Amino acid sequence: MKKLWISVAMAFVNCVSANAQQQQPSEYTLKVSPADIDLISEGLGTQPFNKVVPLIQKLRTQVQQQQEPPKSPEAPKVEAPKE
Image 1 (cartoon, rainbow, N blue to C red):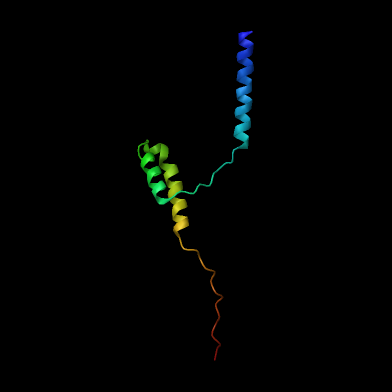
Image 2 (image 1 turned 90 degrees about the vertical axis):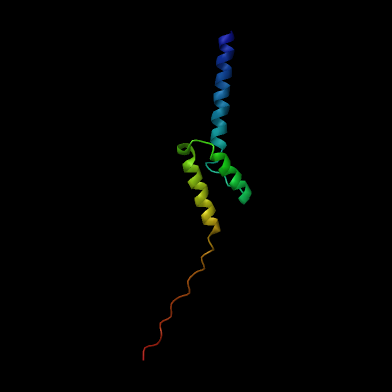
């Protein structure tokens, strides 16, 4: 009887875990301040480099993209009349 309860409990946990994974988005959008980024970077700095370098690069790329000034559309080029 005890083994049956363990099996039922494990099946329930697996089912709940699978449903939770299906409902989570593949990525999140977070809003953090520059001070928050510094703190996150400090914490990541305590981890093994090869483990965190992809995340650091991803964060750096996102910050750089947001710091770039918006590109204004180029005005159409008008050629001078030929004489």
